Length: 143
Image (cartoon, rainbow, N blue to C red; front, side):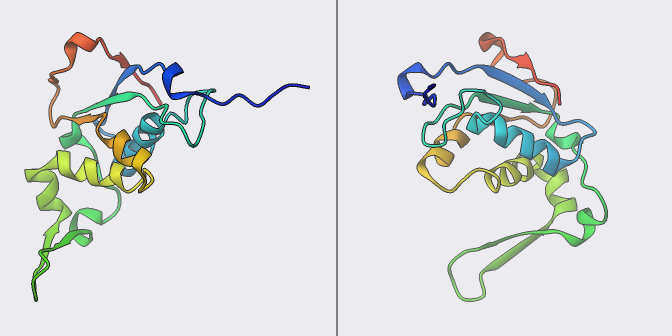
């Protein structure tokens, strides 16, 4: 009888991946990135152990929103004061801060637990082609 494999935090091997978001839907790219951050693409995935990898997303400014999301979708936040609702259209957000749009999409797809918050610290997003983690020798992730 075989036993179920359970990963231990000390045994986790973290790799570096680079994901190119150019001409890909924002949400689908964010879903793949969230899976990499959690470690769900590994055969040794264990739900209660943080076994995810480091992910670098480049060309976030070239990610596309399908349909009429650029005109109809809003990023909303509240200051905490009365009448303090702040709204930004995604067309404006993608022009000014595309990294934030990608980060919000990925953040919504990882669990709101200590493991999910720790996974988000391994996410690095860049609007253009260049990134700072060249020394880690990330490998390109194709999907």
